[in-house]
Length: 377
Image (spheres, rainbow, N blue to C red):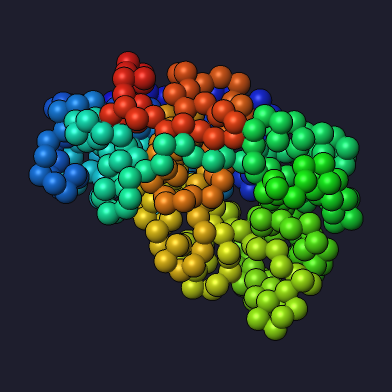
């Protein structure tokens, strides 16, 4: 296994629970012929990896382990001679060091898919006995904070660029101001465009309940993270109010579905599903510990009647491409949050799946993207 550190600046600082960050740091993880001992346990099919594979481990405070913990975990499964120890992947805890596991799991999966001559999406789908993956994935545009006119113009521009789904960041202003902004967007883009709102955990319970009531007439696809990530009970109560009204025939008062994102990092998917706290879950492969675990989480959510949306932790191009493959393997996936390349000042390589007309093409070459990333590690 080979590690190559990288650091990429962000176009705009990102606020997290651990503070503001201005760059994405991580490691490219390369595996290849001679790197894997005990690969029968890693792959589960008894075949040896003879083709190089590439992964990305980019920890993000608030969602994953720290950068130093990530590096330590990866180096801990690598011998001094550069050979992975037996059962290396199983030694990386997806809860404790998800970014590290993501990097290695992706590298091994890329190598295996390339050896088999099929795309990562095809391999992931086959492993879970799913239909053939989609050729393109629909994605949403994201509109930041601004007054109603600025927000509406940005949304109109996204629709003109071909996006059929727009997510508007809210929560930085008063509820009155955000309702006005979202109303302006709905009037600007019409009823055919899916409209989402992301509160980033800004509201308390009383404000969130008022918000769902007031936003119901705008036909939102969902409101994401209306409450702080640690308030799972509050999210469950909020959703219970909505579903109870729907059953009672009074759903017009508060019919906005609830999506949870950061809460999954705090409590885990199983706890969210057990609590009945979400209609939609936002799944980040980097935070879940790998593309395999992200697809498994999507299947688990679907089985519970909850829709999965695949997104990134503002990853570099390698992990972003992997997330596209994960989304493609989810049958009839909703618009995903994969149009995030523009949030980086620079990238590690050219993007093999750029956004066009609101969709991302899924690379059909072997592995992640054929030979597009050869030479990176």
